[in-house]
Length: 100
Image (tube, rainbow, N blue to C red; front, side, top):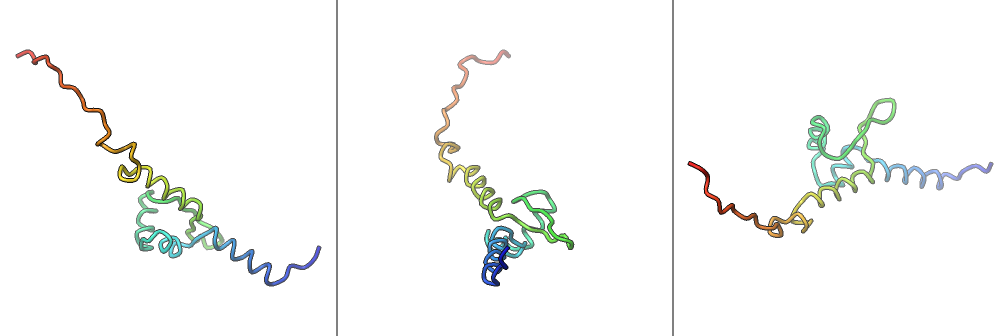
């Protein structure tokens, strides 16, 4: 098996770093502070994260962050017109008067 060149291992390492983000990198990617991500993680909110490595560093998958962003967009009526309250069918009032 041929030895891998330092350049090839460097690009593989870059790919790995691009797939997994630290809390700081994920916060930069999302436009939030790292503190916000720590609070969300503690409350079990926000994008999914996990611990990796012997020191148990909190990490985020880039693809999970992208999926979480898409879910946020779909849950917002401004981005998802099917959720707009302006498109809701008006409810009909009952013409029957309540018994007194």
